[in-house]
View (cartoon, rainbow, N blue to C red):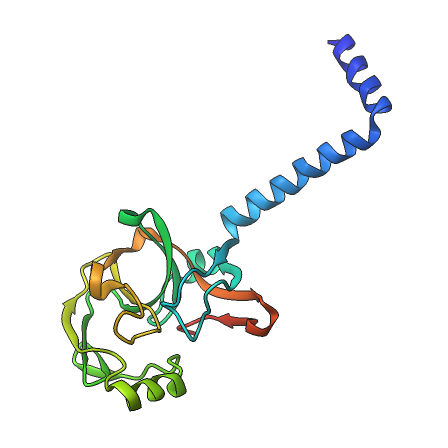
Length: 196
C-alpha cells in the first residue's frame, strides 16, 4: 500500500499539469452531474411546435427544482418524455387531471368555462386568422384522466404542433421539468415560466 502511495505521489510530481487536468475534469463532471440531476435540465428546441414563444434551435435550460417543489400549474411550459418516440418534447400544460378540455371557435374551454390564453402571441395568431380562419381547430371534449396532463404547443395552426390532440394525454410521471430559460441566441433570451 505504501508503495502505491509513493508511486502516485511521484507520478503527481512528474506530471503536475496532467494531474490538474484530470482533477478539473472530475470536478467539472461532478458539478454537471449534480446540476442536471437536481436543478437544471439542458434544452435544445427542435422544430416549431412552440413558435413564436420558442424558436427552432433555441438553447437554454429548464428548471428541475421548481417542478419538484411547486408541482404543475395550468399553462406551465414543460419538458415531457414521449415514450413512443423516445424523445423529450417541449409543450404547454393545458389540461390538468380531471379537467374537461374543449376548443371551439378559437376559444379554450376548461370544465365548461372559457379560459384566456395570455401566452399566445396575438399578432401571430391574428395574422393567421386573417388569412386562413381559425388559429386553433375545434376539438374535444377530452376528459383528462387522473395522473395525466393534456399538453399543446403554442403554434396552434394546423400542422404546427403534434401534441395531445394527436397522441392523447401524457402521464405526470413523464414530466421531467418545467419553465424554460432561453440563453442562445441572445436575441431570443427569455424566461418562459408559464403558469406563474
